[in-house]
Length: 325
Ligand SMILES: CC(C)(COP(=O)(O)OP(=O)(O)OC[C@H]1O[C@@H](n2cnc3c(N)ncnc32)[C@H](O)[C@@H]1OP(=O)(O)O)[C@@H](O)C(=O)NCCC(=O)NCCS
Image (cartoon, rainbow, N blue to C red):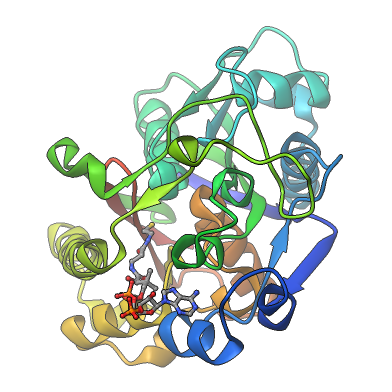
């Protein structure tokens, strides 16, 4: 028994902010952001917008594509670190919006690796025969938690949500192998204190700087390249699959230089790596499911193709999942 994704969807804030727009807010330039990160614009939550609405939209779209009613679901798992409530979980709040009762709904906190971790929890439970139909969400709004005076971090993040509907299925298609890793000893490289204040770019409200996202970018960069490359190689090797046979890699979109360096280490042509961070920035747990949904919509892969998802983020956490679509 295994699990297979049968529907994907994405949701985004209404407004996109370009690098030129950011030049008006911060001491930065389009040239610096593009050349150092590959980002050109990002969707940012505005005052009054809710990440829940965005995740709800992504979930409805995934369910529609799966041809499934919310009431058929056996569980909802959300990879997120952006819930406005410590409890109820983000997943419970989406559950209510979907009008579903009496199924388990819970969050997985693995920062930018959140979707891959949540997918693995869903896959393992379905392999064990616990659930048959699961909604997996990746949603984050880190732009509301950065220091808008800190150009080193404020330009990097975007907001959004992606979702996937998975079913329990025997046969060759679906999740083949997933590997997850964490390195708690290095958590200070990327961290965010929990606090209720959300301060979008356009709001007058500002977080106390000690409560904003902290990142040691250059150190993280090196770890991100090594961990993403290693886990990608391992997940394929363990499954007895050559990376040459993988049709597409859908990575967490943090920085184009990280993605190029990972491809180079693995000897993979960059055309095989799906990139959309130029339009989204780093959307944390939402980045892999948004990219998956876009790549699928663009016809970048099809039935029976090998698709590899990988991510790394705060925790530190990293992981990869190999799927036969
Ligand atoms: C954040 C990151 C893009 C910074 O790039 P970098 O080349 O390492 O840049 P540095 O932080 O060393 O800064 C280099 C210079 O650019 C400047 N700079 C930083 N951000 C800038 C910005 N937005 N605009 C203009 N200049 C900027 C710095 O002030 C510094 O100038 P200085 O040398 O005069 O002090 C890069 O380190 C990175 O992507 N790291 C990994 C991030 C990551 O993966 N995060 C999430 C994992 S999920």
